[in-house]
Length: 562
Image 1: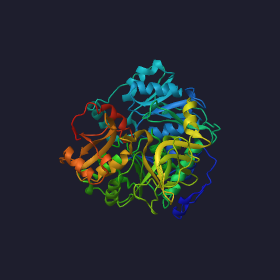
Image 2 (image 1 turned 90 degrees about the vertical axis):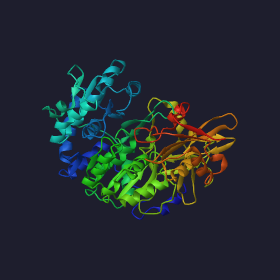
Image 3 (image 1 turned 180 degrees about the vertical axis):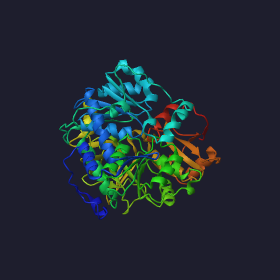
Image 4 (image 1 turned 135 degrees about the vertical axis):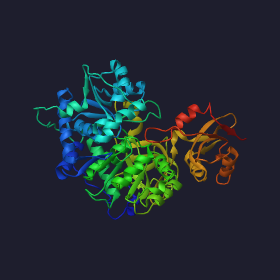
């Protein structure tokens, strides 16, 4: 297959990588052996070395086996980014069980579906989330509920103050001992006579069921192997180029229950023999900025809304972000203005990439120090093929034409759990058909035009929301923007824009529309503008157009024009 993009790789990036034949758990064990005294976890001033983390992982692995968890069993982890997450994560993998990362914000119905679909019999959750676990437990196959608290790994003073804060915020819940209810702290301190588990975990064994966000219907469990995940973290590390083992500090603001945070933060820190700075609440921008400054974070993955929040944080100039070397933005399109502003603030590189839960997740990225193209997701990573095809026939299209993006590589999932028909729809001959509309230029740089399902068809014209959103982000008074199609008797659909103004800024619908008229063809200009205080977002900060469509019938403020 022709790969014109390879000639634009930076000097240190090879066209092909030879990946080691190891499981993720073995990758972790190598780091523990190589860097025992190096910092592994940094959490509000608390430090855990790799030697200590390795001991805790072994202790928890033994505890899981004593609870009856065996190779191939599914274990749900419903935690934010706290030290218990990497402990549980690598313990589950070590005994050959399958991880089911679960969003702590899930409601009972969503949690019950994921537990039942995955077949999880064990869950690890925070004490504050125990009531919803307890409520749905009889409707699931759960046998073991392991409870922990954010308080357990805080430094002494914060540990003392935490109960007061939790009670004030309504997050304090006392869990009583009962059959099937276990406490994380007990399991890692209990003295077992058992040996450290030695389970034969192979690269092609399943490591994780990673559930899609459910934005396109029922949430699906992408089956990812150890090989998939090891390959992808090595691909990304190679792409970073001038990073050095034991010298980097990885800021972990993206949640580990999402593929993006799992690979680019948790697994990346382990691969680099470097510390991970855990941020349990990425919406707390002040705490995040303090962590970057204090720990001198060098690598940082995020989503556009996170970088927008940093750029517009009051007093941002007071923080020293100069330690940052490279940031990769994914999860949603990165507006050019946002990237430029962040680079001015931090002096580090911020590039747009692309990925999916089904691809472990990263497949494309712009060069960190090489050629970047504005508005592009960059080129495929080493060992990755990509093409643009006709959405119906799946035949390749000429360069420059818009079609569906298809991807092939070692990071592509083996399928959806218990969903053979859905798997056949997206996986054919090793190619994953993404459902994203894209184009590729002569140099092999790819551009996401939009999600196929988000395309607006107005009066016979195909309109992609991203193009309009890019224009809206150029307005000096607009903080956030999203565009959807809404029913229109005459055109079939028409364009509606949702706008969040910057603090203290005032804007009318007419001003927004006139601004767009100066930059867009008439058929693309929004006919409706709705102002909001905020936009609905997923757990990683991706704007949920689906929710905007559902709620747009009852707007807070709507202005229209004909």
